[in-house]
Length: 298
Ligand SMILES: Cc1cc2nc3c(=O)[nH]c(=O)nc-3n(C[C@H](O)[C@H](O)[C@H](O)COP(=O)(O)OP(=O)(O)OC[C@H]3O[C@@H](n4cnc5c(N)ncnc54)[C@H](O)[C@@H]3O)c2cc1C
Image 1 (cartoon, rainbow, N blue to C red):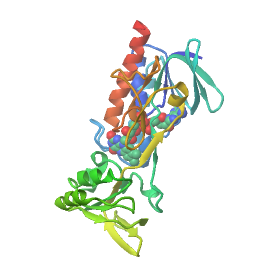
Image 2: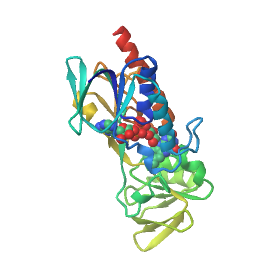
Image 3: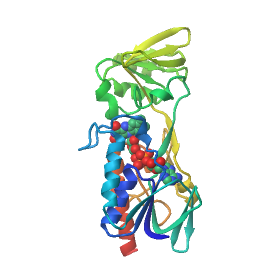
Image 4: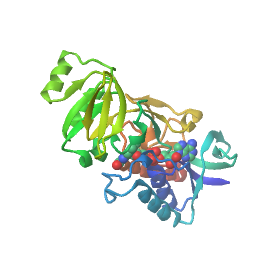
C-alpha cells in the first residue's frame, strides 16, 4: 500500500511527526515495534503538561489523538528493511509485509548498552538512572553516585552535585589526573577507584553498591551514562550520514530534520546527541511539517 509519509517508530518522536502530517490531511502510516526507550521508568518527568505521568499513559493518549484523524494509521511491527523505490521508499516488516511512501521519517530511537554489572539492568529507570533532569528531583538530597563508563563521567559527577552528595565510582576505568582530582575535591565528590561487583536493593528504596575487596557503599541512586546504538538498521540501509558523539552515533539532520538522503527525515534520540521527550516531540513535529512541505513544494 502507498502512503504520503511513513513514520518508522511510533513513540514520542514518531507520533509527533505523524500528527503534523495527519493534520495536513496526508496519508500517514506509523510503523512501531512498541519498545520506547523509557519503558523501564514508572514515571516520566520534565515534559510540560505531562509531568509525573507514566510513559505508557502519555503514549496511549497520543495514539488515541492521532487515530482520530481519518488519514492516519498505526501498524504494529518492526521495519527491518528500507530501500529507495520508484515512488519514493519501501519499508518491509519482519512479517514480510511491505509499505511504500513518498517520504520517510525515521523516529526509531536508540538502544542503551548498559554496563554489565550484576543487579544493574533490573534497576534501570528505577534507582539506576542516566538523566538528572528526568529523575534527579525524586532522588535528591542524599547520597548519590555516578558509575563511570569512561573519563566523561567526571563531568556527570560534577553535574550531579547539584542534586546531592556524590561518590564517583570509577569502576577501574580511569584515574583522574591532578587537575581533575582538585576539581572533584572542590565539589566534595568522593572518588572510589575500585571495580563495582554488584548492585543490590537496600530494602528502603536505595542501593548497596558492592565493591571489589569486600567493601560496599549505600546510595539513594546510581547515575550512569551508557553508550547507545541505533535501535534500527534503517538509516544505515538508506545510506544516511552520521555524527559520532561521546556515547554513540546520531543521524545527521539539518534544521528541517532532513537527513543526507533527500526525502528521508529523522528526529528524536536517533538524530540528536542530547535526549529527552520534549526535544523528541519538537524534532518530530519539525520532521512532520518538513516532510509535508516537501510534498507540496518539492
Ligand atoms: C530509563 C529512561 C528514563 C527516561 N525518562 C525520561 C523522562 O522522565 N523524561 C524525559 O523527557 N525523557 C526521559 N527519557 C528519555 C526518553 O525516553 C527519550 O528521549 C525518548 O523516548 C525518545 O523518543 P523517540 O521517539 O525518539 O524514541 P523511543 O521513545 O525510544 O521510541 C522509538 C520507537 O521506535 C520503535 N522502533 C525501533 N526500531 C524500529 C523498527 N525497526 N521498526 C519499527 N519501530 C521501531 C521502538 O520500538 C519505539 O517504540 C528516559 C530514558 C530512559 C532510558
